Image 1: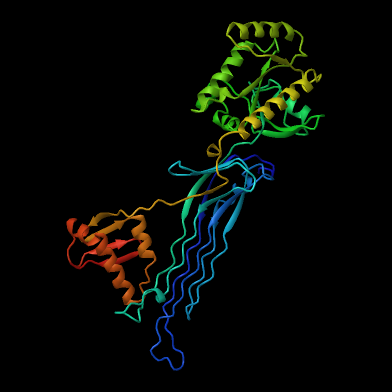
Image 2: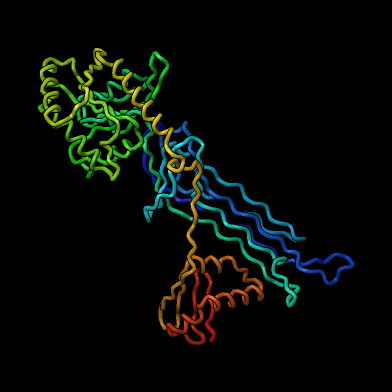
Length: 437
């Protein structure tokens, strides 16, 4: 069984917001008022389900074993025109860096990138209206009330992209985990074989001058990663959030690989991942494992190849074992992080995302009629089914009101066009009735 520290960066969950409370049918019967009017109160609003970004969380592990969440319904309306109590919203904490998608459509509902940011993922149903709202000059004592609106039900895919200032990229076993262990208090698994790192490891780098930044040791890339080879996009999604890339290239002369080909392969995978070219991020080229005999010669050839291909960047020499070049590299990384943050700070306000997102359900009044069998029809339509669910069918006034609304929407005409005749059975969700011309 996974330990509590297991890194989980994708999961599927179901959320059910609370139903609104039902409106009440009631009448006044006070002394000296024998002909009192309607006095049924409205139902309370159902609870919504809201995600809150929390920078104290590092994984979606909390959602691994609990995948269904349900908010409380609102209280029903009361007599004497008293409103029902609204239900409390259900707040669920997620790590900063969580993106929420509709599981079936792939629509992005929201992106939680700041601590405390909120996202309404399922809205609670509104309370049904009591009969105090349906009195008219013709019907002064209406036996009409609405049931509470159903709360939204959604199936979601949560995807966590690590929020690190600096991301370490490169082929497997080029020294990324070793560097992270040297400059931070993180304790990543280290070994000399491919894919030692199977999950991102995050640590904080604290410099003597007081500057600090977060650094992530991300799983190794290989050729074809952007198409899913190896760890593929399981890794690449985490590069999206980083401000600076430390591109580590091994100078081990015994690994049987060409340094420039390694460098070019990683750049190609970064550029191929998404429409947003990850290879355009701020980059520091790092020649790692310089403590190995023969590394100097390989580095010299690497620099020649870079120049021959028009890459005019300084190559930082590094040995995490002897700590050669570590301080200089970390200082340069901090400089680039500061530069990127300064550029982001001066962006026009319209380019900066709002801190609170709310999902808005599209209004769909369309409906379709399906012939199930001879003399049996079923009507489908999101808003139509919601209308039926909110109709109180315990009173004749409510049934007649629903019939008038269905006719006004064109349901009767469409049924006739599909061949319905008197006595045919019609279904709308759990509700059924007999069609009458």
